[in-house]
Image (tube, rainbow over all chains, first blue to last red; front, side, top):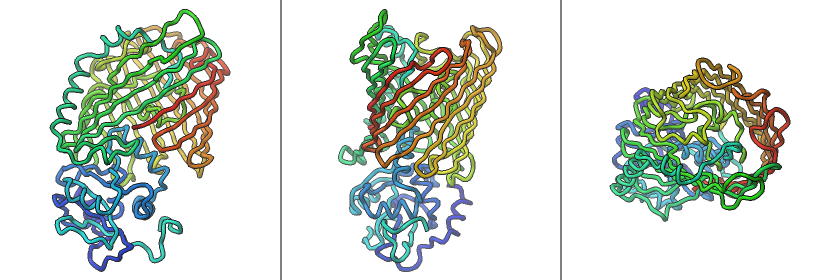
Length: 156
Length: 361
């Protein structure tokens, strides 16, 4: 990730300061991921859309996703990736054939936490209300609009 | 895919020709990486279509069983593709990819006369390593798919529109490049994706003469793709090649994919000039296909394409119409049923009914 992109991300409004609500999305990374700044929605999307594949130190990024039926995944897909699930599935299949790994699925928040804590380079997302292990890095927070749900929400 | 009019040779000759040392070496290298990889995830994490993650290694593949019922000639039920690809992301310098494929294995064959049961053959489709460079650049070395149009780059049966492949997506250019390539992908998708490539000598582990039209000993080119949305894009291709007869070819191509609500339009067009020695009846080659598809719901869709193709040996351009229906019970699994009708010229794809069941695993 180039330095100017990191700076742009810093300016994109996703500061880590401020209270986290249970309905928000918290982006976490493995303890070895050495970011000194938060990253923005656009950069998180670039990771999950497999356009950014290495951390600034050159280590491969291992993105983690939730299962298709997860409400949190629908929230993340809509608010962060800004894509519809069908197109996204087709896209990831294409990228997989091109040699990129689609995000690995973990079927609970605890599984995501455990995976991100264990696997170098891993990045994942959990709900704001989940207690986090002390050693994982919070790299971004996504504020979910009041009243938003997977059934009534759309790209803001 | 069905390369409908290409003959497939007996398995013994093909196996000897194709199980060459590069394939074995590649598989051995990958097996070594697998054994060395710490298990970070396992079978419990397997999801259909996403492969099996074993630490920094991913095992995946696809299969396609095809029924071909042309109006004339042989009918068959065949394993058209059984592909295994292994990719690794170890460090920014070590990102190997290997794909080997069993193709053209008849399960049963009937009708027609004078031809033989196809016993299948193994091909080394891709073997390369990627080095991730700063600012979205990647340096690739090895055997790769040549980025001419879109179909050739994602030609796995579960990913493409139809069972029968339009001729323009594979017939008139080098489908592979063995050498070096530089790729650029803007993380924000605001700038075009670019790939330039160069093959200075013979293709690595080339398929046998009996199933390829041309062998290339020099290939160089570029592809520029402008992203319009996640799957929508407009692409431009250029490829210069010299085949083993000495024919020099300059190809110019345009491809596009655009979605409006449930309707998707896609197509590819190429135009080539030919010079130097070699067998041909014309000095230009051209063709294109245009395809609409319509999603009836999340699982069912209807599709069609029209293609016109004028090859270097054809006295009149072939024209084909195709219509079909697809059922996709899972994003990585699709059943297709389609009918092709030749409407002009000497057929490239035969008139008839075709069906396939394909799975990305």
